[in-house]
Image 1 (cartoon, rainbow, N blue to C red):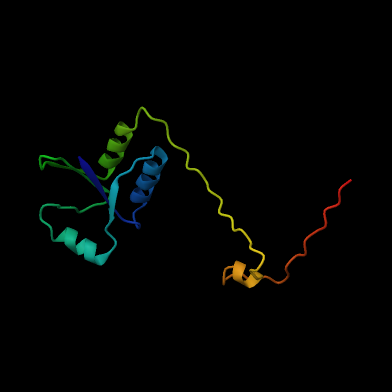
Image 2: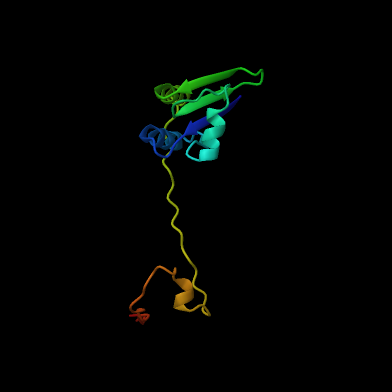
Length: 126
């Protein structure tokens, strides 16, 4: 079975659903309908009949397609993950290694402005 979620970044329900999916670690193929070309292809495909987001299609090997819309998508998610605990997303801090031959202007992003570069402090051992 393959599942495809149709969503929009302008829908608060979709944003909430994507957050819930992330918290459970759910991995589902997604299609954002905000692109005019994608939206036109969906609207002109009589088999899809997608009129609201979020919409989840479950596509089975035998050709059967189940469609879940709106609140039903949330219910399906909660049923599928009812016995699992939510996954806390890990925060990865990005660091940059400074190489001795790089100048401060090469290290900083173009939008950052530095008025003064602090001098290194001496380490005094007792």
